[in-house]
Length: 432
Ligand SMILES: [Zn+2]
Image (cartoon, rainbow, N blue to C red; front, side, top):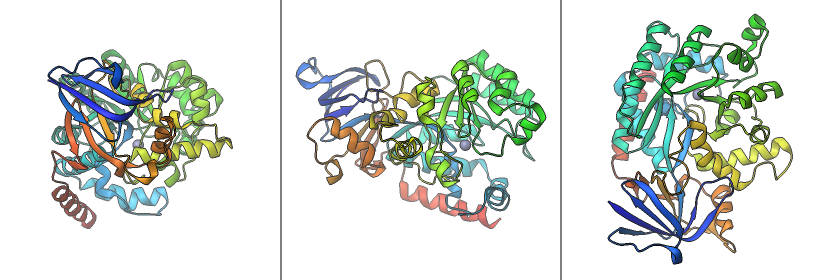
């Protein structure tokens, strides 16, 4: 099947912030085959033509999410972390069923698609149910099976073996990819981290884990081993391969140097880091060292929106505040962190940029809004997208050329029914 998309402009999602006005984008069998200005376009032939009044962007890539936690959005607001976990989260999660996870992921996935997020890296219980949910909504996901020593869960070695079996047995069609999600160095025994990393390297799997989110989480490991968590991970053979470390807020120069040396990618979650007062990551220093970096929402219980267009604005603002310079993160870089750079951080060169050869994950942003004026230069569209737009400006979304959101509405999921389902399940989980 051949499709031709025409639009006012395309923001392609590269580091340079390229904007192509009066754009034509051709798609064949779910992949982009040509992109450029309309006067240079090849003959459309028998392609189905989709004429869009607004701006085309790549589908956004969310590098860190626990989206089924939509069941717990806003619960325990304002509590300190220990009480939030012990009094609010863990009792609810102990009652969670596989059906709850699928229902919540379905709703949250549809919400993300509505905000232009076509791929998310998920880490949550019942990974097959997360896969089933994105099968329903039409999104893509990289699902890192959580490895965590919790009461009621199998021994760690069994968890790891099952996670590897799930990942290596999957079809590899590009819609759902499974990885490994050893939660963090302060929760998972070091030998398990080492084995998980070795298995991931052997099979080319993504390893997603939390690193240096708070000031205190590494204190016991520092006392026991005399090393920071990044140094400990390096010494234990955990680094190398497709390692994606979430947060990385409290990193000194030596830690960053290790990330550069081992090509560890960072999932930067500014909204979660701000809400939980975790701190401000050293985004400029990471980029200057050539460290791969992408944006993540984190879970909806600690963000609370699943809106990367809003979060990339926060990323730019926080980086500028941290450095005391309006040049600390450009609008082009901020948008790239949610698109091309995010795909690179996840290790998915098939996603994140509008260019020939990549998958046709497309977002149409409606620019018929005062926040998109004035436009004296096409680059103004990128500035407005970063500083003024958010998820509500997303009108249409395609994944692999298939429409999944049309005129702001999911083509696959009844949003009202899905919302009521989540509300009922959340009430049951809260009541106990
Ligand atoms: Zn997380």
